[in-house]
Length: 208
Image (cartoon, rainbow, N blue to C red; front, side, top):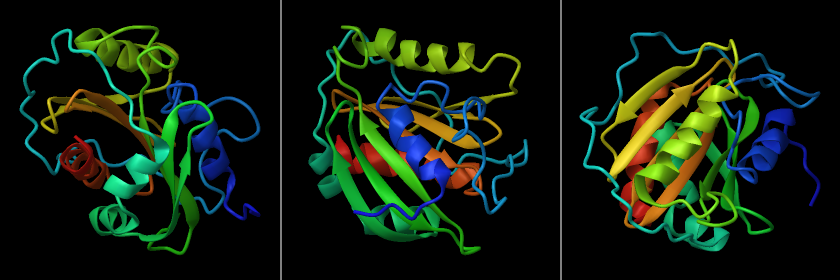
């Protein structure tokens, strides 16, 4: 199918296939950076999470189980994503070539075209055999360490069993552990951080 979306959509799919590493840095090759419509701006520092920001219980050493891309698309529908983020979701496509993920084609309120990707981490392919809190901390630490000098806002959330959001200049990166699964979400920063926080709660509710 022809891809008419702007570079951030193609970039998002490639990043998620590699544990969404450097998702929040907004640096790198030709595809890296903000959407061409210029709608990517870092949300205000005082943005409040839309969910309870009390840190939930530890994941312990529980094994991580991956869903398929289609299971993500079926459980977290286009309507779920659209209503949560106040955007028009044009389609939802499942991918399983590496990390299982569902990519949602989106038209933003200002008419921009981009995509949002939700992925389910595989314990071996994505996490190197890590489980529980070790797996969660690994994904967060890798994204933070590869940010270099880029300023990244790191917020712990109350979604699922454990969750966080990292926000950089171009992208929000959410991670939530729920029901033995570890999910990540990549969302452009023209969508408010508070809405992304709510999305993490919806992901945990729908897919756990």
